[in-house]
Length: 125
Image (cartoon, rainbow, N blue to C red; front, side, top):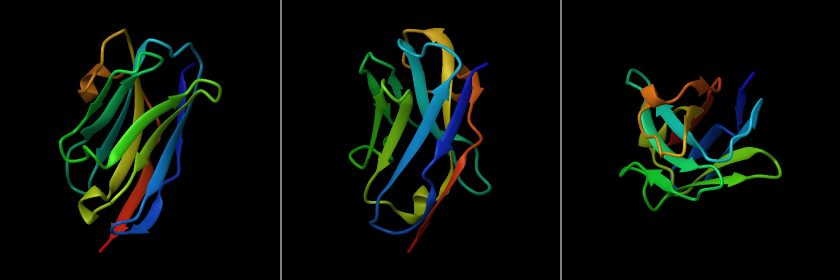
C-alpha cells in the first residue's frame, strides 16, 4: 500500500521560506515521478514541481521557477519542496503525489495515482 505523508506547512510572512516534506512508503520509488501540487482557495489543483526519483529530471511551474526546489533523499525515502521568497499567491494546500508509470516526468494531476493528505501553506502579506 503506497502511502505519502506531507509535513512542514504553516504560516509564514511574505519573503520567508518553508520546506515541505513528503515521506513515501509502500513500494520502490526509484525511476518514478514524484510531484508537488497545490490548490489555492476556490481554485483548481495545479502542478508546482516534479522530479524523477533517482533520475534527476525536474519540472517547475513558471510561477515558482527560481524560488522553489524539489529534491529527494533516498535514505529517508522523502521528497522535499524547498520554498523561498514566498508570496501571498503561494497560499494553498500542498499535496505530494506519485505515478505508477515508470520513467517519465509527469506534470498533470491526472497522471498521478497516489496522493498525500495535503499540508496547508499560508503566506501573509
